[in-house]
Length: 355
Length: 260
Image (cartoon, rainbow over all chains, first blue to last red; front, side):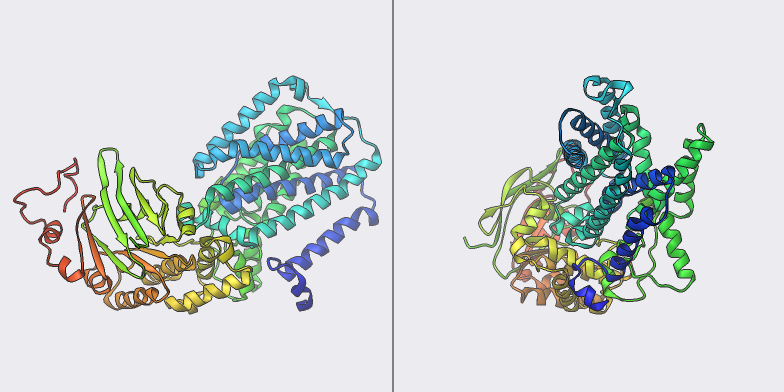
């Protein structure tokens, strides 16, 4: 372990790296070892994509503390740009995803640069406006988005559907790595400082404007790529689904359910969200939004750190004292290497979980 | 004119209130300048203007020959002036060590900061030792006493290696023993090739440490000089004790509510 640790980058903890590799290999091998029925196969593929999107949302919502209710804008932009590229050019699909993501990132910068100087609820409200405005423009710009009837892509072959599983997995793995890097590196400390006190951060040299813009662009790129992937996966997209407020809310929900500000949490949140959505929509198509609402209230009231908070509680019950950075909404992140053993308990505050 | 930091008729108005009114000041290399004045005199506002938290209404602030007035706070830090806060503002969710690491990794320009996180952490540990928080590195700021948090403010600002350190009431609210340790700390900071402007209400502290003292009242500079002279200056005594003025020296700019 120590040998391994020596050539790992400074920001990676050896145990987290080992866990990451194990999970990755297991997921990679799963469809090769077990015969997955198409439904499960599809759900897993979607889950990988949503994990990536939820992590990207969490960079802004969890690391910087700027809760966005407008990420559907980037999801949709990425999706439609990808779809149009695939329909009218010979670009390979992965290049189309990347271009879609980049356009989405630029779009994010466009609205984010002016709005990110707002803090807390004011920023959140602004993002609702951005998301809805984008949805309306997209709905009426029918030459590009197909209006309310949407656009269809050629139905992909079965092999391609199979391959999407691994593409989604690689994408997710890359985003997980980027999440750890953002969290544990110099940038991560700066983001947490901005989250803690934006003015005090400026007074020790952190440019909030610059780092927030950078994070939003990165977040937009990843969410945009997710949108492009979504388009390829379903071969049909329409504005009210891609740009809908529910799309934005779903990213907030994944973050809150899993535990805002944590990497494991955002990933778990996405998994739970997909499971709930599949089951709730199937059983209670009229009620599921209400149930999400109840879930949100319950999480915020009882365990503001969400699933990762529950996990930490469980871990403490069996006597494990997590280092500050393991999974706890560990703002104490980089302290993990400190190996202090008895890092003080995270005192989850309502504020950090409140969307 | 070899002053490290100079202000030329610096003003900051909030609507009709002239919080800082045409103030000239200078700070020489290696000097400790005390900044005193009654509550509401504009001391902290002057700090905020110097360090870029708020832009001045008019005037110039020149640090090492460069006009820094109106630059955003983080660029002022990179130019070489860093402040602490009167009401301490640690990053509550970062450990004490990490708080200082932020100062080290963000307060300096790219060429002067450590290349690795490990390097930054060991520098931060040295700074914590220096201010006397060495054994608290892994704790969170909320676990410190007020004196500890004030030291953390200083350590975090020192991490930026500023040429000019602006201390906003680091001693107030502390007991005499704690005050003494902070005063010693301020003296030893000077050995680090830094010049200091300190706002302070605790007269023993400010008079004992400062080479020179500047007095603000209603946003205007009313006196400046060596500590011994300032403490006998009738205008200063008047500003603090509110003696019956024979004649108002400063025209009241609609700020009657400010009790002197």
